[in-house]
Image (cartoon, rainbow, N blue to C red):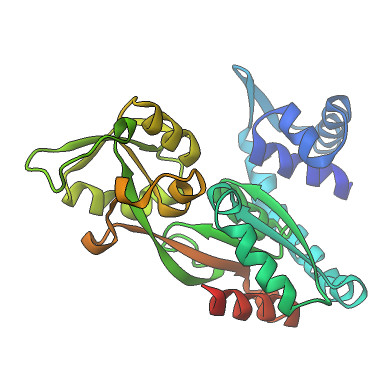
Length: 281
């Protein structure tokens, strides 16, 4: 029964049978059978199709709301034993971080914790947070404000400067009197929500949104428009510093933070990881 409930949770996060099956490492038919077993047991429809996606019914959402904290607590019961036996730390990391400066920093932390084994997963920040809450990840390194994450232990590690990559790397006068249209990350990103007010103050207007900062940067480099990205992304793509407009002095940056469940934060392996990471950054 627990694996069936875990499947319902995965489906509520991913929204498709394919993504849920990929996450759980089972076939799509196995996902369908598990949901069917739950619906038969509770005598209620728990999911419904909406276009190409799947969403929870009212009964399905009620069940997920009830079981999420219980399953999280069940996982927590075994976290101490797992770490004592394996020394394993499962970490969720925002995509733009693990694709840019993250690996170099994490390998430095690993050198200070040779007894630990790091297991990394990369997702968008909202997914990282959800999987920390569910107990799948022990800790996370992600971006955005923590205003809505009061149920988690959250510590800001540093503020990464945001930069403008001029279209086709041509010189751009800054600041400008008029608004500057840019390509940048879309609303679903925790980063955008954390700095959109500052962007508006600086008369930076998002004209095009994409799901990846690296896509934004590549579009700007190619000449499709100016791109607003974290400096780590620009540097990873080897954009010359003298081409970039660094907005950190103007107050535009994105917070990078360490996140864990409060019950997990006190574990020595998690605390040591946070302290070492904080020193490096």
